[in-house]
Image 1 (cartoon, rainbow, N blue to C red):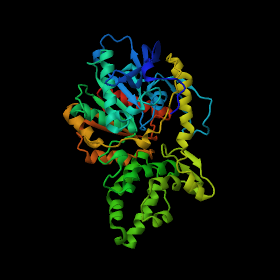
Image 2 (cartoon, rainbow, N blue to C red):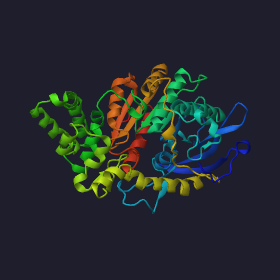
Image 3 (tube, rainbow, N blue to C red):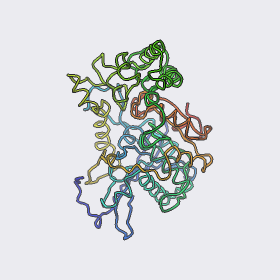
Image 4 (cartoon, rainbow, N blue to C red):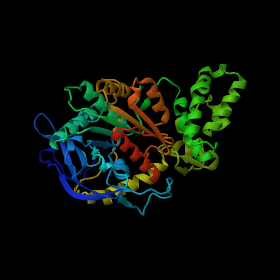
Length: 481
């Protein structure tokens, strides 16, 4: 990967930037300090090999920080910087939201003081993992120690322990807030913290985890090899996207989705199991119901054995209108390519959400937020790497579902909040339901809520406000609802 800053490990000097600010929330002026810095990893010879870059927002009028929570927040990928959660939700400055299906990838962009910021109740540490954002992989030979499910989680744990020691926050309640693969990172880190890692044990424990766009699973990486038909797992989200665009019912989205889930759990899964043994009468009933709930045509269902492929769905639900929906947020659309064969072969990963919002978040962070934080680096800000292509997905210590169970059972009192968008075709709600029904988690300490949004739940002024309020409630010990 090319760099604009000439860096040699032997000459690497960690960066650190401090600034003072205030923000007014609900009529109260809150003073805070920001500390943005490299958190360096060294090899056995004492040479720097990698850095996690952190952005800490610390309220300064708190006398006893031992009782003040700290939230460590990050995105996923793997290989993503924290640009989305930073500029979209958690920072004291964030983007503004208008119509979700915004017509352009370009400005004018607007960044405001975040009226929903959680700094009133918690200090915030936003994290760029190794090699992402301003995080650095200084020695490519060391990549195996960072670029993998368990290695990445242990890097996070080492960083958190060092950060808490540096700023004397060992007594503070600690929370992890991960989006997408960040949920995998959180569950794995919490599990390893409770049971031990590759070469050492950890002393840090987490009071709770916020899972935004869940990837915790009883199967393999990102829900692969879960022993149930993928069409059944995806069904609640297909119903949600169909509800949004085609308005098949006067019900609320949650009512419609849960009714669709009940059908999928009973009739649909059995029909797929029976296959050709299904009677014609029963087959017609299933086709009618599946089309009603998902918006997929009879012709498609007959051609695919009543099953729905995730990728096909995005091109099928609005096919009659000449549009495809986004994997990241089913509310968002783009025109289909003509002829249809080009749409099938070339357009699948042309995602309407990424097309419109990646530029917005990047512009807001680099053009407003970083200068506001006094961060002045001659260093490329890498919003997303391609590390996921060669990520080590081996889980020697168990699945992410097992790791979360280990953390919650070995750390009595630990709580988990799953927040998922009804229109998220990337990390579908069905995987949340399945994980909760099969992972053996303590149900009295697990909370789940759906939002009328997609993968980045906070897209939309109402959504960012609701999600922030629910996280605030969770941090304060309440039940998000």
